[in-house]
Image 1: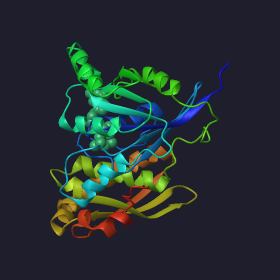
Image 2 (image 1 turned 60 degrees about the vertical axis):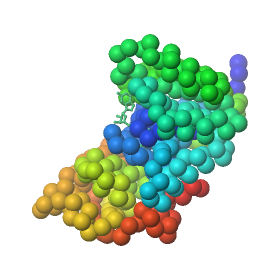
Image 3 (image 1 turned 30 degrees about the vertical axis):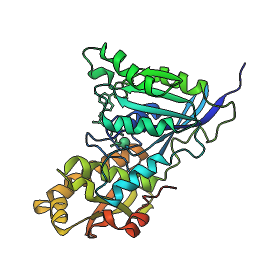
Length: 298
Ligand SMILES: Nc1nc2c(ncn2[C@@H]2O[C@H](COP(=O)(O)OP(=O)(O)OP(=O)(O)O)[C@@H](O)[C@H]2O)c(=O)[nH]1
Ligand SMILES: [Mg+2]
């Protein structure tokens, strides 16, 4: 009988390809935030997947994109591009419905990594005609050699075992890196801040969601619940007004949905207080970006 395998798997792809949805489907928890808006993920997030074959430690990354308008956007690309330390396998995820210039940018990046590569087409549930996959597969695999190609739907949990089979085939034989009871290496504080940001991204419009960041100021367990104070940073006073909303309605909705999501993830009762503060143009302030943890080495 062969020994169990274990290793780290980087998920790379353009914004909106479905990387975070895939991470959540593999782990079975709402670990990484997901929205229909591009550039939702801003940090590397580890999701630990245990199977009889071994342990695969997936790393979700920010979408690789062409926007260069803020220091934040440039950092997001670097966070993704620098995901190679300790990585054993790279999965390039594409939206099967269309291949874009940003996918080609990811392809160039993946080609430079001297690692086993898997090409994964996501969202196949949206394709009425699957014959287009042949052409799209040959476009990408003629540019770069892949060790395997898989087709899946992250949101419908289809094709996940095919992906895992290929992943485990390329992982080294070694004991698990993490305690099998863990599903991430991220702290509860971090997960809570992200679930607040997810609601802000979903409930705000146009450019405002991109100018919002969340910091947890207090995270305390009492006998009966977790008490959390979160600070929402916005880039201007105008945005502050929109985050609060008329009569505080927007903030109230965000707070309620985030409280429920945090409670579900952590399996405990949660009390959540939200505060909003303007920090002018923080997305272009390198000091603020460091403080908020948007670091390449994080
Ligand atoms: N129909 C369908 N939609 C999907 C699938 N996977 C993801 N989506 C949707 O695609 C959108 C983007 O998903 P995310 O998981 O946030 O994408 P991402 O690659 O993490 O995006 P960034 O964090 O911005 O880089 C969301 O609206 C998802 O619900 C799928 O398999 N099928
Ligand atoms: Mg994401």
